[in-house]
Image (cartoon, rainbow, N blue to C red; front, side, top):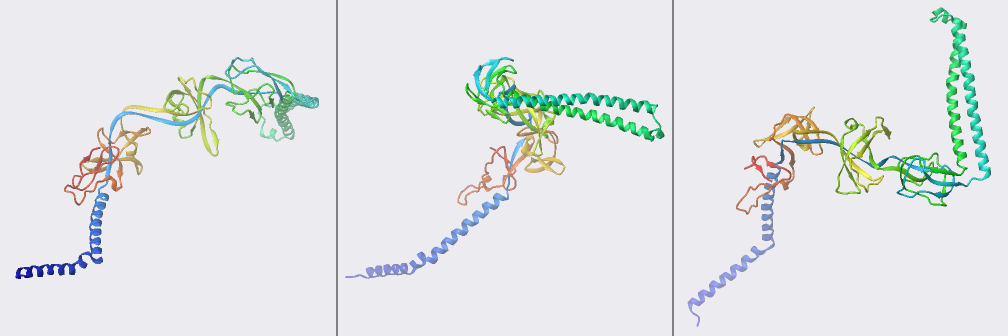
Length: 455
């Protein structure tokens, strides 16, 4: 039997069930979920906007202090190892290597036998070369003989002119006399003929030299060393074919076995005193002087630094594609034994040095108008201060006036949001400063912005 209390309870339960059934579509329906999503998007967007505007409106300054230190200015150039009195030795004969008297690493003196070559020229080639040599010699003899006759003609013309005019300083009227004009012209022509003949003789001599080399190329030869040094880069063996070169010492740092002037048989040089040949621009050359110190790094010896000194500076530049460069020669003060000619090297030449001077990082220097300036941070405020600068190193610049030791100068500004730290809207603590790189970092504006953010 159902009591009134039980009926009331059942009615209450029915009411809650009915109410839940009526509100369920509202709580969990599509429209309600859309509303909640939009709500959270708006909330997150608001805090994102606050974080962005706070970050962009509060730039962070990277700073450094004005300090006293030693500053060294330098010029850096690259080059290759070379040696004194080094050159490739070629064969004067076109033929076959008949004997080889040295090997790589041997030490030789001036006049020592190096190799012997047997000519492969035919009898006809030898006769033709000899005929050309005789013809060239006759041409030179004729040019020299004519030089004597022209010298005689010049003397006669000069004497006639001096004798007939009769005075050391003729008047205007005498200079206009036809005889005077004729004799003066004859003298000038004789002088020109005599001067021009010297050029003819020079050309005849060059022709004779060429004919002599051509004839020598058909003859057997024994090649000796023109300098004292060490043998290297032997490119032939007994039985090898060689082509005549224009001379014994073909070129410095000869590295090819077949050059335009013939076969380079071997190289001889003084490898005990290596130097580095570098090229400096016309902007750097006024700073470089003989005797300046240098540091040297070699690709073949990574992690090692060697000491050198400027040994020579060319005063005449070389123009290549409109660019002027000057050769600089740097000698090792203590060269490694394993060093070899041709190795790549980087040279830093110390062009200036100052001790105990005020310096700032070069990044702090700004070119404003006609004079350099730096930004000084003082009491949280930035001031643009004109300065006078001196020498510069790779990283620092000397300050000769405008700043004092210990002042903070701005070297950079962080422009990205990563420079600041936005606080969470759900955190109990807000406003923590961020961290920057390189020196102290300061943030202008906002709570606590005037102080330094330590690294």
